[in-house]
Length: 200
View 1 (cartoon, rainbow, N blue to C red):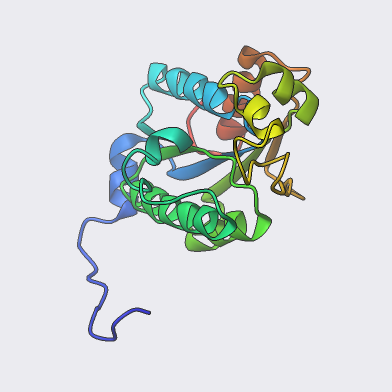
View 2: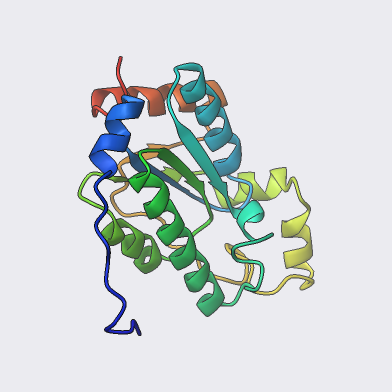
């Protein structure tokens, strides 16, 4: 619970000024999907494409965040919720700085993803469902996690022993069973330009 004596200080330089400096519309692009779906790969490829266009970005990646900001959290449902809350607050600050924030997290629960959306202004949260089937994710298994989950070495593993709630109406769905990385990035760039986040 917040202390009533903690009061928000409104500074002169705001998000609009920072965004104008960068010639872009700040947003949080939230990639959600199963482990091995390609979230981090696509987010990284999109960031490369945006930087090549002189856009200002920052990529928040699930594993990297757990090395520091969320290093004290496990993988229980409560810890997953707190993980997403912290990431949402971080992404909000970065968007306020005028950045295009790319967030690649399993983020399995609808309620937690919606809570991040509610932190941001209308149109600032772009939910991208990296819709890769469990069978394909498991066949990829780049970190060997599914194998460990199947043998019980990893508890609370999303898609195996813990629930994943796919988005009901995301801004964009990438069927990565059918699309290449390049095609996925092209769809994302097209969405960002058509929606006015970046220039043509």
